[in-house]
Length: 158
Image 1 (tube, rainbow, N blue to C red):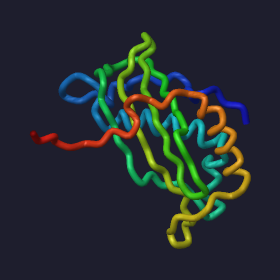
Image 2: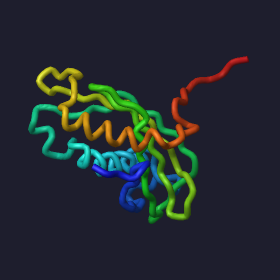
Image 3: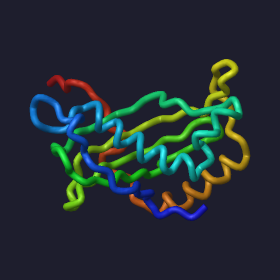
Image 4: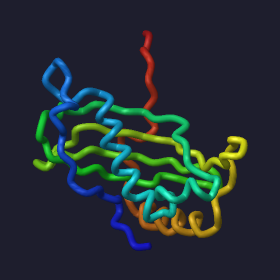
């Protein structure tokens, strides 16, 4: 598996039905864009639509989204995915939504779990998927760590 670093999705467009009463992309649909990107690379990693038939799947355990700049109806975007870390049962990713004009619209950081659906319970990944993640990790380890990775939410009191 040879992937660019970071992985970049196909071009996606902001749909009219995704626009909220403020005239920009509703917050829920930023997640849709992130998820479509994940679906594209998941197929290459072995987590495609047929993977659930094996009795295993992935769950997102945690997701942090930062809105940087508004998107509007018809905007063309791509989404990148950077594999920050992984082990036999989990993988940590960082994503960015990029407008076609080159500006950053949002970031998303996720912790995903490999799940044995018979429990359901967190379980080790099959060797072939782990090998694909290791190859992706090797390519992504050459990337600088994103500045926004590892952010937390809270009100700082003085």
